[in-house]
Image 1 (cartoon, rainbow, N blue to C red):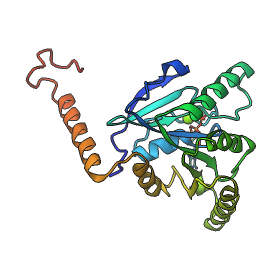
Image 2: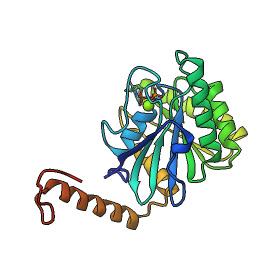
Image 3: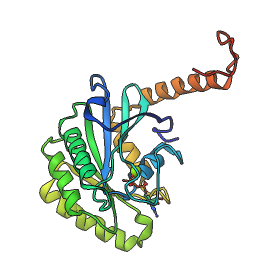
Image 4: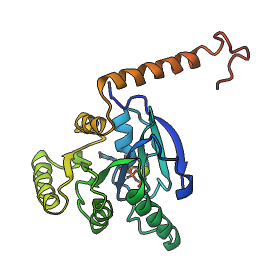
Length: 232
Ligand SMILES: Nc1nc2c(ncn2[C@@H]2O[C@H](COP(=O)(O)OP(=O)(O)OP(=O)(O)O)[C@@H](O)[C@H]2O)c(=O)[nH]1
Ligand SMILES: [Mg+2]
C-alpha cells in the first residue's frame, strides 16, 4: 500500500496571504513545466486516479493546490511554468507567487522538480533550481514519461542530467519516473516519506485515523448522528 494512499484535497490558493499558516506544517512542493506531469505524479504517489486535476491541455493547474496526508503534512501541486499562451499579467502573478513561495515558505521541506524526460533541464527548470537552490533545501528530480523512451535512451538521459546537476546543485537527487507504468513510484514515495518523517508508526497512525473517518462516513446513522445521511 502507498504511504500516500490516504492523501486528500485540502485547499487551493492563488494569493500568498491565503497560504495556510506554516506553523507545525511540513510540505513538499511539486514544480515543473506545464504539462510535464506534476499532477499525474501526485496521483501516482497517492495511488489515486483523480486526486489532482490532470489534463492534456497545458496550464491546467493554475493555483497552488494543497493535498493533505494528515498530521500537518502536505503535498503541494504548483502551477506549471513555460506555457506560452498565458497572458503576461497572469504569468507575472504566477512567477511572483512561485518564487516567493519557494524561497520563503518556512514549512517547505523540499522540492520535487518534474521534467519530461524528452525535454530535461530547460532554461526555466534551471531558473527554478536557482531560485530554490539558494534555500539549501533538497531537490528531487523526477524524469517523467520514461515510458515514452527505450530503457537505453532513458538510462543515457538520466546519466547526463545527473552529471549536469551534480556540478551546480549538489543537494539534488534524480530518478526515472512514469505515471503511466508506475516505474519509480515506490522509490519516490520512499524518499518523500523520509522527507516528511513518515516512519512506520506514523503511517500506521495516519491509516487508522483514516479508517475511523471512513467508518463514520460509511455509517451515517451511527450513534450521535440523528439526521442520517448528512455528513460532516
Ligand atoms: N505517457 C505518459 N504520459 C504522462 C505521464 N505523466 C503525465 N502524462 C500525461 O501528460 C499530460 C499532462 O499531465 P499533468 O499531470 O496534467 O501535467 P502537469 O504538469 O500537472 O500540467 P499543468 O497542470 O498544466 O502544469 C496528461 O495528458 C497526462 O496523462 C507519464 O508518466 N507518461
Ligand atoms: Mg497540473
